[in-house]
Amino acid sequence: MDVNLCYGITPMEHRERYREAVALTLKAWQAREIFSWNGRYFQLATVNLWPRPIQQPHPPVWVPGSGSISTFDFAVEHDVCYCFLSYSGARSAKTMMDGYWRVVAEKGRDLNPYRAGFLQLVVVAENDARAEEKYARHVEYFYHKCLHVPAMWFSPPGNQDYRSLVATMSNPVRRAENPKNLRYRDFVEKGFVIAGSPATVRDRLKEEVIKSLRVGNLMVLLQIGSMPHELALENIELFGREVLPGLRGIWDDEGWVNHWWPERHMSVRVEAPAAAGAEERIITVWQGRVRMRVVSKGRGPALVFFHGPWGLTWDPFLDQLAESFTVYAPDHPGTTPEAHDDIYHLDGLWDLVLCYDELLETLGVRNAAFVGHSFGGMVACEVAASYPDRVRRLAMIAPLGFWRDPDRIVNWMMLEPGALRAHIFRDPDGDAARRMFPRSDAQDAAATAARVRLMWAMGTTGKFIWPIPDKGLKKRIHRVKAPTMLVWGREDRLVPAVYADEFTRRIPGARVQMIDSAGHAPHLEQTTPVVGVLRDFLAQ
Image (tube, rainbow, N blue to C red; front, side):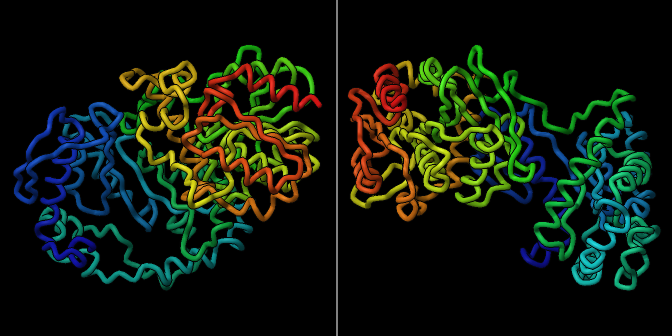
């Protein structure tokens, strides 16, 4: 419909265009050299895909289908996953999926259930009755008001090839009944929507969809019709916690392998390496939606370290602090291993501050020393302003938080790797820089993992400071009551040292310690002098 009516492509032509586009894409993913493409529909003098896919020989391919039997042949011949998309439920899809599996067998492919995917609408609640109370009006809204697509628009003449047209006319895949005449209980009973308690939903998905259609890749639609944001999140959370674990291993007993799902490319984990003798734990905050790893080590008064925009790495700086303090170093939300998507539950800086308050409350940390670097310095200051009783002394290393037009802060997220190193470190080739950045010519799994971690950390922290790192701290900083010290590298090329004035004139008694032969990360380039200054200040 979009291609034909919005872009003016004749229906008789767009299927062949699609197939040529697939061939072009597959070649572009795999080609090692620049090539030309002189096809029937696409002519490109130079095809040079960059960046290249990580997966080899190419990423897994899923092909959507909604009724054309010729798509069965295409999917099987290209050895890709066929995904049936339907709003009518598994029962109406049974004939089509049986036909697909016949084609798989006829063409000599194995009957691996992961060759197939299916889209199913799902709603979950505490019990079946509560599901009706919560979701009925939203399901009815979807089927009564959101499917206004005239048949001639959905599939204009020429959209299907001849074989598919004959098959569709002989055995319509879409239900004959008008969904506008049905109510919530009809949709549930007929399988349009699978709804109810976790047990009801789990059992129906297993029998009606996964086993009956023989699908290994289940796609669930959990936001339906007029369902508001919070209710959709509740549906997603309940499905993920109570339903999904009971479905994951259904095909394991038969020994099938999902070749159509991205393999783990990294042979090493992406997280920051933990320190020898350190304790790691995962703390869950924000109504169970945000997981934050906390690395702790040492003995003595509590010290909370808020890391900068490049992620948490346990380095000699933290090791030396741990000789005098019990150091708690939390991962910024979204940078904890296996919890990368948790960052999407936080909408703004205030959410982030509240998360840290919940984290510290769970840890039982009060009246602690706060130390923060760069972005982490700003966060430490925000927490200290919002919860003055949590912090005993505050030390910030080249913090963000203000903006002066004459003294612009460089947007590090827009720098290429070499320039980024030169802006963070006085000596971009020194030991400190090498610990943070992989070698530019390194292509092994560990180097790739380090680049991923660095890029993702910049993205998750950048969410709270983009595009200008001034989010109103000047309106709140007067609430900071703790004695404060600022540490700045004299050769900081990222955040000019003049920004120390913005802090000292707003926090009574705040003092500044300049560090020679250091850039934006003085605690990494001049570790011993910085630790000495901080230890003297924090121990008072």
